[in-house]
Amino acid sequence: MRYPELLVPASSLEVLKVAVIFGADAVYIGGEAFGLRAKAKNFSMEEMKEGIAFAHEHEVRVYVTANILAHNYDLEGVRTYLEELKEIKPDALIIADPGVFTIAKEVCPEIELHISTQANNTNYETYLFWHRLGAKRVVSARELSLEEIRQIRDKIPEDLEIETFVHGAMCISYSGRCLLSNYFTGRDANQGACTHPCRWKYAVVEEQRPGEYLPVYENDRGTYIFNSKDLCMIEHIPDILASGIDSLKIEGRMKTALYVATVARTYRKAIDDYQKDPKLYEENMAWYQEQISNCTYRQFTTGFFYGKPDETTQIYDSNTYVREYTYLGIIGERDERGCYQISQRNKFSVGETIEVMKPTGDNILVTVKAIYDEDGNAQESAPHPKQILYVDLGMELEPFDILRRQEPAS
Image (cartoon, rainbow, N blue to C red; front, side, top):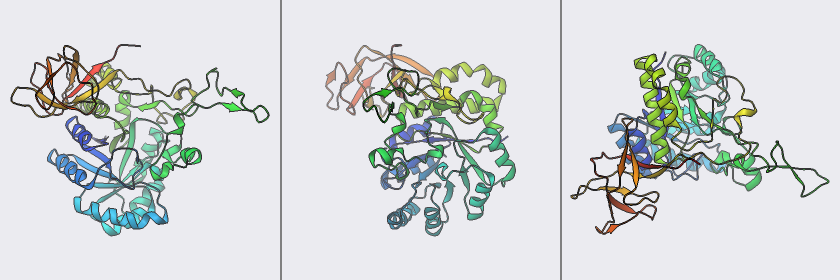
């Protein structure tokens, strides 16, 4: 049984730091070009440099995505981009395209190359192919079962690593290679510009009856026929660890710091608890289940891990997330008054009870005693997103503690 890496996404420098503090062994990020999340905030070169330095100070690795399926006109820019990455020294590049892989080997042979799930890695011969070319790691296709992953592990060299998604949103298209967005909007998912048409609402129209919409499923409001539940393997850590996977990957390079902190902290504790004592893992299962549902999600499924999914893995009546908590901000520096700086994300008020979420696993209820703006003026509430504020919560806090508010049950 291998002791796997916990690999966590980051959409920004702030989220990278949260991921590191809340338990990631490695973080994957995207630059401003050649990744598959063009709508994410992504990182400038300066932000990458700062993020890599911060992660390395905490003995955490950083991987940079360059996993578009490149066209001819991309290749010159890819080379320039990789030359820039060579200077800031990420720990690995995540690549899908053989052309991009070839350029990366030429430009920065000292950086590990990981093969993206976008390359459709479904069998051990594919893994061996990439290993012969110099890949250090291959990310398994989403449509593999745990048994298939175990078989791959048995057929590949020990030094070739397997990375597998264990949590997050599922794409309707196997391994994320989807043409729906391109067809409907002209924005190519394989170039990083997906508009997520799998979350849209669909109905059937009979050719001779234009305007007469027929539900695809038994629902008089139409259906979200492509809308998958989210993957969650927190209840199956023993099976994951026994499968030979080297890196457990969390999906979510467009997610908030609250989401990343919640998922990273929960999987960190589950993995560590099981390694200490399988009984401890079983005893804490209710805690994992409760905590993992504290972030936004679309109900949960085990995906393809235990066989092909059936109709119960789809959500037909809604494309909205379940959200039990609202993200309020991240604790920063303390001033001379004993107040803590935050960049506020959602409204909260003096006298309100909110929650401090700590990397240790503790969640502490506190009352907001005072809010001040940057000029020291007292405010009754924090209504403006991204406003820099100073808050008194009546207790000592640590940098990167997360503030959140539990929402009433609907």
